[in-house]
Amino acid sequence: MIRCSKCILPEDFPNIQFDNKGICNYCHAWDGKWKQFDYNKSEQELVSIIDAAKAKKRRYDCLIPYSGGRDSSYVVYLCKNKYKLNPLLVTFNNLFMSAYAMENIHSMAQRLGVDHVMFTYRPDIIKRFYSAMVRNGGEFCSVCATGINHVRVLYQRIYNIPLIISGTSSRVDEQSPLEINSTHPAYVRKVLIKSGFSVHDIDSFVLKRQNEFSTLERVRMKMFGNDYTTINLPDFIPWNNQEIQRVLEEELGWKTPDRHKDHIDCKFAPIKYYLKNRQIPHFIFTQEKYSQLIRDGQMTREDALKSWGKMLETEGNEPSELEEFLCFLDLQRQDLERSRGLSHLDYISKKDIESKESRVYKALSYLWKLYRRM
Image 1 (cartoon, one colour):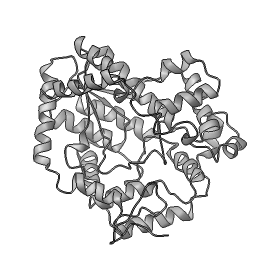
Image 2 (cartoon, helix red, strand yellow):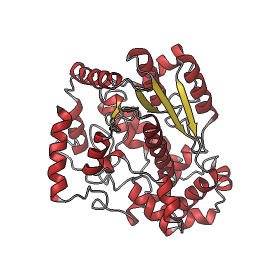
Image 3 (cartoon, helix red, strand yellow):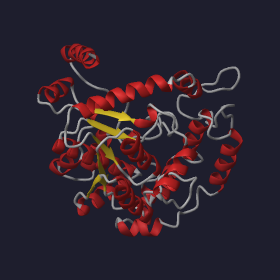
């Protein structure tokens, strides 16, 4: 199989194209945004956003969705120690949290002296949501993503917090196109409706993401003083995994079972990759992450190919957590077999997730963007 000569994305990756040197369009897009990125200028912009949030003098300057993983822990560390923010940490209890994540959450909150909320949404219905998504969608992570958004929206409204800061990066984290993955609320709603859940139960949990708000809703939020800004901290400052690991371990006593693994906060993370590789054989989800790290100079192409090759050898092996996962969600092996060919693309297309507004609201949206820049 032909692969990009710079990263490791293969020729069957959605919408991929290669230039005459064998470099893919995804690498060119990354270079266009990040190769000459001005971090001094971007941090000035970041400080300006932070100062504006502090100036509102709310109970909390910012809200941080906190999983107990590496990136979100580093966000907490920087916000508290470097940028002197008073954050509220919020954690969605996805019912799958690892012992390492729980220990890191309690340790970080105590060491940094910050307020933290662990939010548990009705476990009975959440487990049923998970099971339904596996049976009818072939995956379960969309429920967790929906829960994270739920707790973000809920506590932003409760305390009228002006700024939400996350640790997701468009520079070093996997950026899957719609053809590969989606946790979009439109998709979640359709699967849950097909599974027989009531509209009330669905709408009580599946809340709109910020980019789904109509212009009219945003104007109303601004008028009533409940407007807020959402940023990804790694999109403003350098984000080096080794340096982050060093800081967390040496300065905060942070613990991890494996420095080279992501998602140590979820004990069923291996199931995520197992199910995805059954949907798309030989895809190996992690190749997207490796490709981003190669572009950013944090991983060599040779090391990425070696790691990818090892994963390919074991892609069909059942994770040791599979039996516990099935038992916890009251699933049977035949449920996994029936869901093998399912995909989010059975429920949504690009048109389904496009913002749909009238011409009047589109014009209002343009004026709104100009206003926000003032």
